[in-house]
Amino acid sequence: MAAEQPLLEPVRLGPFQLRNRAVMAPMTRSRAIGSIPNDLMARYYAQRAGAGLIVSEGTAPSPNALGYPRIPGVFSEPQVAGWKQVTDAVHMREGTIFCQLMHTGRVAHPANLPEGAEVLAPSPVPMETTQMWVDPDGNQPIPTARAMSDAEVRATIGEYAGAARKAREAGFDGVELHGANGYLVEQFLNPHTNQRDDDWGGDVERRLRFVTEVAEKTSEAIGSERVGIRLSPYGVFNEMQPYDEIDETYQRLAAILRDFGLLYVHLVDHSAMGAPPVPDAIKATIRETFGGPVILAGGYDHARANADLNAGKADMIAFARPFLANPDLLERFEAGTALNEADPETFYTPGEVGYVDYPTLG
Image (cartoon, rainbow, N blue to C red; front, side):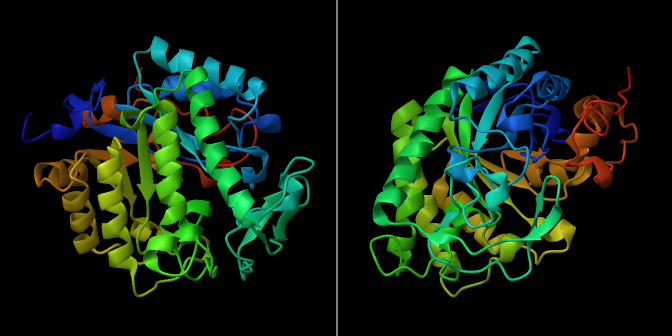
């Protein structure tokens, strides 16, 4: 590995030989009309297949998980067929792509869900300030979710495993469990959003049970060597709140994930976007306890990515907006050329603009 440019060097990640250490981070783009992936999405991901690893946008494992407008699922045959277009396009360019399984939990509006689906969460804790976009009505207050029954918790765990199997049918190389950013997995971890007093809430071990069983069942479904997880300790996105046992919770979780043999842990720090920074100490503790590959994400540029890789803080570095606006990001890093700026006005709009029309060096 070249000491100056480790980001651009190949790396082994479990069963995968990756062309570099750059990860395209999962980014919701809201182009999946009817929650079904399409040709436009295949073009978008294929353009960015130069990443060592692509992690897809958050993808719902069930109808209840479709909290945002125009986000894809991976629980129906049409969705599997749609994703097959995407994975085939990435593999044609020798890329590696994982499907991020995201259940939004309480961060959802019922108008964005299909008929018969419900907004469910560990506990009925209101969203105080966050609003949700609804087509065509714009931003709307988020109604309070209904608390899941024991049977619904168990069924949801099964949905993750079923979605992982369908992701493999769709050609994904593996899956990433979205345990960050205030969505369902983190809602079970955090005592502010998990106020249960049954087997799924209370002390640290019981609040860990949901993610533990999701990781276990998903690993049984497709093999732990094809399962990663994204975490955001100390995160405040989607009205997450700090609590006394944060360090204990994530150190214990890292040990559980190590014992399951998960492929990687992906840690996100939103301080570059104005959130409180994630302490370096908890990142180091998770890395040491997990003992396997760690991906770091959060406001990285080329220089800082190389510095943290050289310092042994991570095995790979994830980039979000730089990949969004620069399909040829690694070529630009290698050439030392300027990057395109991302246009926030088109992050979540339908269509090609701000999606597949960013210019490349070629």
